[in-house]
Image (tube, rainbow, N blue to C red; front, side, top):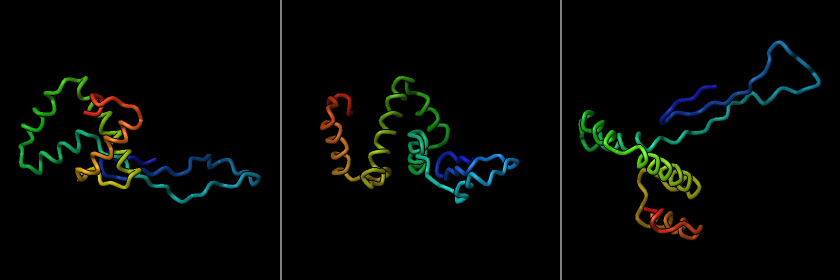
Length: 118
């Protein structure tokens, strides 16, 4: 199994015992299956701040200044938003205002309270 963190692919090939060759059981399909692991919220933020020409020291200070509870909320929201974008075929790195409003409306339609959608 090969796993790359931010923008790489995940390879999940078959795992089998090469010593046991039972002709009654067909071998699994050996073709690799790739999926892209979503980048973390911090990776996306770091990339954006770097593009805005913030120094690494400043970026580290910004990211370290958040309380752990707030980071958990941001991470959970990013994960939900990224999944919604994938399902809705929206680029999570440059959504339009209309697409963000659709994401928020979907949350309201599912019964979430407005203060949980901030």
